[in-house]
Length: 343
Ligand code: FA5
Image (cartoon, rainbow, N blue to C red; front, side):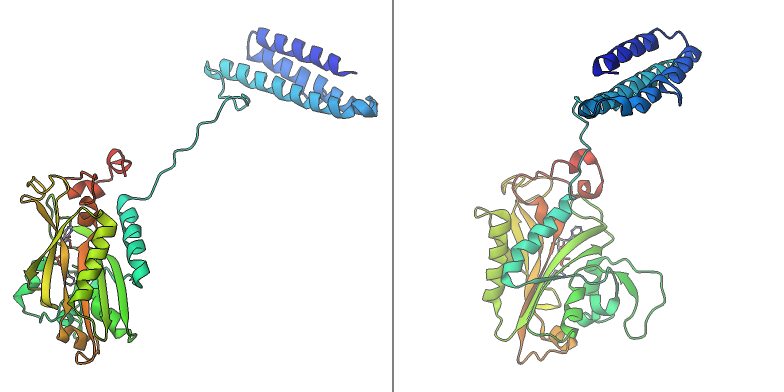
């Protein structure tokens, strides 16, 4: 038996298969060629009689023929059974269909970028609970139980037993809840970057019921307002580029004194005013020097130490990056792939 003979067997097998009139005829042919005592089994058995120097070539050829004939049986069988050719895995020359590869959600990308910008300044990323006690969200931040400023946070309350010490359970309305938790760790100096999910009873083009904030907190000896301004400027230049402007507006957060709201010129309308920003500026978040009462809640001596803090919305901050053109914050978590794959 030589290799030329193998070719002839393949030709006649393919011809017979193509002429098979029905499934029964095809099965007879299958037994003839591929059955236990079929032609190909015979040829495999006779390999011992092939001269040694031809054994390798013979074996390879025989395997190829088996594969080809088997493929033809599958195709023809599929035509008889389903009226369509089988999806063949045998066309080795064709390029495959590459699997679709996704990418990180735009907010995950933004969070990673924010962390990377703050890391060289010594900020370490932390994350504090999304379900929080009123105490850390408000009381410890210089807002007593009945203080009217709490209303601004439009808080979701959790239907759970109240704690005598810590009050009601809430969905944390801001990352500032992590400030006193961080101080209570008792490690000074502090350079915290707390990025966590927050919740508020708000839905508009600028507000989501659940969103992310990133909160910086620095506590050390001799920290003053120039450090705060320096860090904010450093972040803004790195995140938005040199050409964007920020402005600080005096504000009255209870946990910082003095306090500011930080605005950035709107990239959608370049400061002219649009449906998103209305007057050319968009609020990114708050900032200020940590109030002495907050340091005291965290067991830190305000005579010796001082600090600054800032808390900004991740989505709002990302939306104000040049060229993102997102004019409604609600698109970000609507999970529409057509929207998300742009970023
Ligand atoms: C605060 O939450 C303060 N804790 C910020 C702060 C931290 C001040 C440290 C001083 C020191 P405010 O409520 O303004 O402040 O929210 C801060 C930012 O979070 C907003 O400017 C906005 O960017 C974002 N934000 C607030 N509510 C929403 C919301 N519902 N949807 C999306 N982003 C929001």
